[in-house]
Figure 1 (cartoon, rainbow, N blue to C red):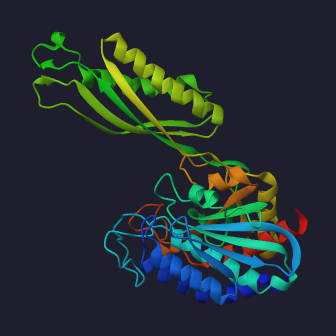
Figure 2 (cartoon, rainbow, N blue to C red; figure 1 turned 90 degrees about the horizontal axis):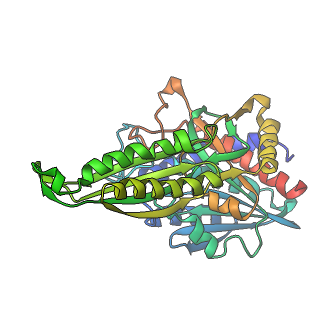
Figure 3 (spheres, one colour; figure 1 turned 30 degrees about the vertical axis):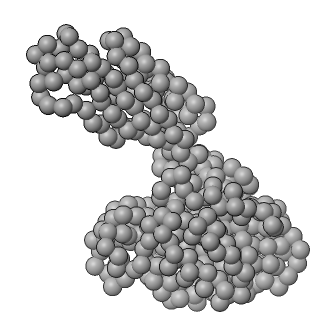
Length: 395
């Protein structure tokens, strides 16, 4: 292990804090990350790293060539913010009305930049190459990961391993959260339109009530996770919007609904889609109605490769001791398009602890008071840098 890597990372703490706050103050929505990408590119160049910009519109790719031939590992951070008005009062709060880094992508980006700075100083001793992916549009499906892949970021040189990172307020600052296997769910969207026949509200027998049918459909869909899928497999079917009807005395002939399906197993994902279609068909047709079903594949299941996760676990424990790692017992039903990367090459996503109850940093992702304890930044940078070295030397 390079001498004093943890100390070198800690010495970067003030700089990483300034970088994170600069990005935080000027958040940008999906595919609008122009200012952020320019800042990232400038920072990489200052570290002596080759830079390619305009990848998948606003993405940035850095390439660090080691002093010895070998494989290539990639580190990924995402850059986009959310359409949320920040309610914090910190000096570095968002200066863009209605836009905020409420998911911590400013921290993700900063951590990967920190790892890049550390690795750049070790370039002569590196066996192989390190790529740095700064991705646009994680928050806005279909996301920026797949466009980056299609533009060849996993080639020339070929990427052999990929590490992702996400700040996590549920993990104490300075700790690293790890999990083998499924980490985050497939996140799919669908639209359902229930079709009936209009009539006077006083004569429902002359029509087919789309609202009454929709109520039956919504109730029936909840039997998919409770009665049709292995009860040890988490599945979520949520109807998030519903719109129908004209006025209080008219039988509605049309109700439009939108929902999301979350699954952690590919077979459950396929079965649940079929059951949404089948249940809606049977219920509507039994009353003389009809339906339209539009299913849209979202981000796939994010599964962490145990071998790569073991490398990150070792890296963290080498640098900060055995207690630096928090084992994540349960996967999240949230989605992440980093899953596209690990579907192409072996990889994993670590959860960077940034929570701190004493400082009041307790709010969840997407909350208008979301913030991070910046101690996590240099710790995460050190762990990612060390994990990259191990991958190149030993895998």
